[in-house]
Image (tube, rainbow, N blue to C red; front, side, top):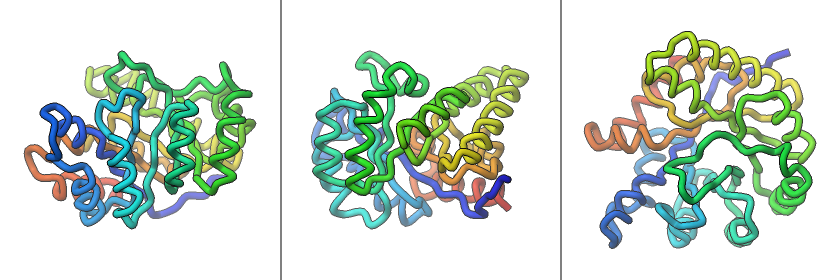
Length: 250
């Protein structure tokens, strides 16, 4: 039986505020200030990806976010010993394990749990034992979802990138097929007792069908909101996304 929540949480990813800062160096624009603005605009949490090469978010950003933000911090991280040590030192509310390649522009696809199930199970355990809500970023795939259960990750985040890409390219039949896949896998994951999140590439034009999936408890959105903020301001951009999500749930 599907049980849904009326309220859908919004996690705002602030990585690309740091990308702009790092393009020139210095302290501005400050991603922690962006996090404060995001919370005031209706974000329920803040997401930040501390990459191995530190191309955007820095170690100091994570330390400041942990100290200064009174909403949950979702630390996106590769499954490396360095990131495990950082997460255990700061103990963010949540840790989302993602695949990471140095040459990629952004996270490409979901984590392949099946390929390294034993290692990931051992990786998740200390985070879970420390009280972090561990999520695994995966494609909407039945075998990967079943593997997430086996490694005892309580949360999955479904990769919505293919759905968004098809929409942007005008491939509407493929987009609709991917939406069906996301809906079916969200329901399947929920039936196994997993909390279901979703994200990657979502915009004003694509968020509503995903927000309507009753099993999805949280969306994580970043790049589009930071880009839209250039034209409308961050507060207005987030408030509009929050409005569309709330309308979809009603």
